[in-house]
Image (cartoon, rainbow, N blue to C red):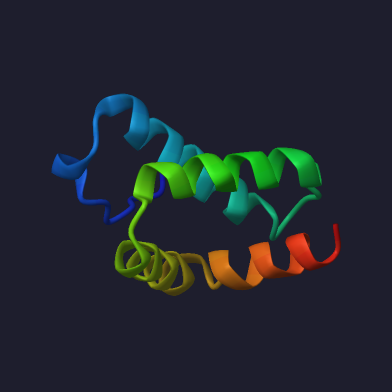
Length: 82
């Protein structure tokens, strides 16, 4: 099981579950295709929860170091190709 460095005291349990689900969805792109609409919906949900540019950048960096995949670059690609 992946361990994510999330600021757990900033979020409720439901929000943490959604954040982790989004991270796993992003990571799954390395090995399989994901429905673009699902990915964009989960990303928008994630951004509503995070709602902080500095925290978004921190989590993007953390996920990149952990899995070698960037949330920003991935979403940029999917949104530009919608």
